[in-house]
Length: 295
Ligand code: CA
Ligand code: ZN
Image (cartoon, rainbow, N blue to C red; front, side, top):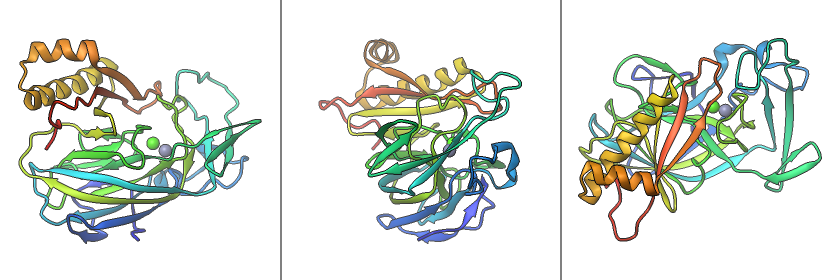
């Protein structure tokens, strides 16, 4: 079990462990507040922000080199029995100056979230997941081409992710589990919770990929981000178009039309005004007569 925490994605992080392709690797994670919130009297602004968004790792994947794609299978996600959700200063479309900010501790029982006087099924997911960028240091709170804080509620048990590798060993890390999170994560906070994640790695050699890709049972998604929503949509759509052209052997205009009649453009995160970029996913249904988009 890996339980070493880091706060940035960078090639300078010391690997917590070296792993091989096919190894099952277990990560213990803290919630995105490093478990600092233990009472509803604590507002988010009161905690130590140097310890926000811890990720566990990184792991050095033997054989991974720049230009490869790291394949990550989410084998299992276990969550604790209480999570934290809140509103935050200056965050999200419904925030108004002077609002009474609020923290809620929310129990999860038998797979259900207990919220006020209702219950609904939990959807354990991974918020922060990715690999080191080629240069520099990206805080775990931010998304990008390396992955990071994508806050995509489809990153769940049995999903598979593909990341462009920029440094030797990839330096993979993850954290920020949510027991549940709505598309958009409006207030900037999901149902934040600690737990454990089990993953397995594979590598694809020399494949051009510019943004992370998510594969679910029936869909492919490119996940991209930017401060400007139109630019984020463009990044995600362009990458999806290139992947389909390449895999299906169709030209760009046909793929554009295909995406327009069959695609699905969805929002992972949209909690502006805040400093967090908007995260978009461009989806396309799997088609049984066609090959995988990445292989
Ligand atoms: Ca997050
Ligand atoms: Zn989170």
